Image (cartoon, rainbow, N blue to C red; front, side, top):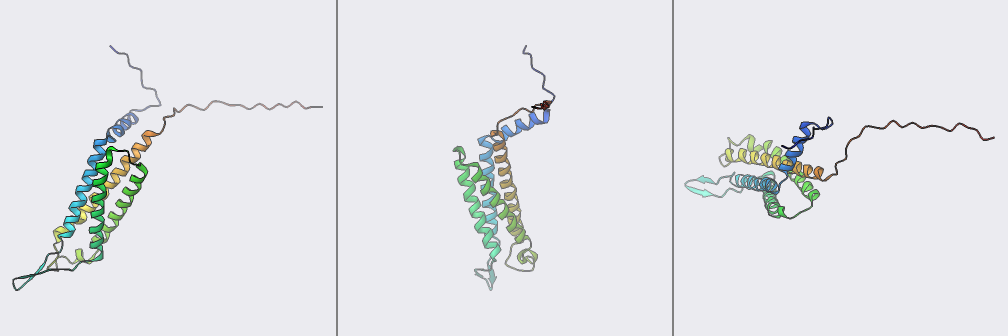
Length: 190
């Protein structure tokens, strides 16, 4: 039977659980899975945005609909870039790519996706999608939802990278302050 040391008072159980969860969360397979999810969700958002406008049918003929907005074009371009970035980072996860550059890219993509999702939510296409005949409202709403989920996934990967950076810091034990007294020499020189 093995004798275990008691846990010191300054170490609490949540801290131990946090270290265990951080070590579990930063396995290469977990980060690769998050990157794969980011790529898939970005592709789904891009496909939803591309299929949002349907062609007009007049007198039995299909007329191509070129009606779109700058916000939709920017969202398609950004989700395409996000899907490519996540796919490349998923493949390169086995190599050690600089964590700070990954975090910067993830934060930038999360902010841009969130801003574009909010712009699309407030756009006229969504406000009046039931009034127009060439906008698929369900695709529009699903594209915004996928963009918000992608934002959360990029934020999650930033949090995982932060946990990995804090695990690399050296652990310094906390000791109580010592009672230090300064004694002044009060003898006068004559």
